[in-house]
Image 1 (cartoon, rainbow, N blue to C red):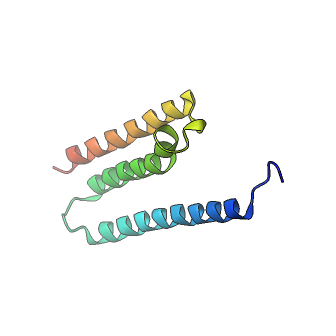
Image 2: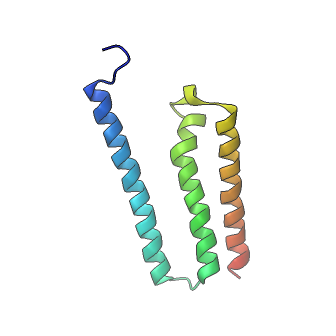
Image 3: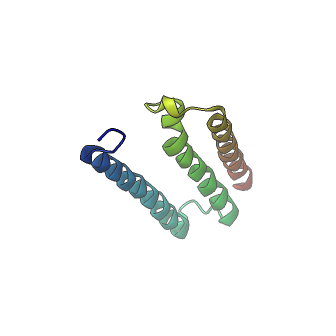
Length: 103
């Protein structure tokens, strides 16, 4: 069928969704274990800034990197570039605040 998805494409999309969900699950479980253990004695503020900054970078790597630099360049637009810089700015600011709040 023209315009319809084939069974191979549906299986590939399902595998991609499962991979993304597994990545988010590993990220959040890792941060929960790290926050509960707190091996470096950072405190709540530093832990929050570091977790939010790394979450922003995770979102950027999963959503915007394939669009801006990877195989999905045909989805590129000015709005996605602006949102990408906004998200990277939040991530960088949060990681900067992590180093400030850590001391």
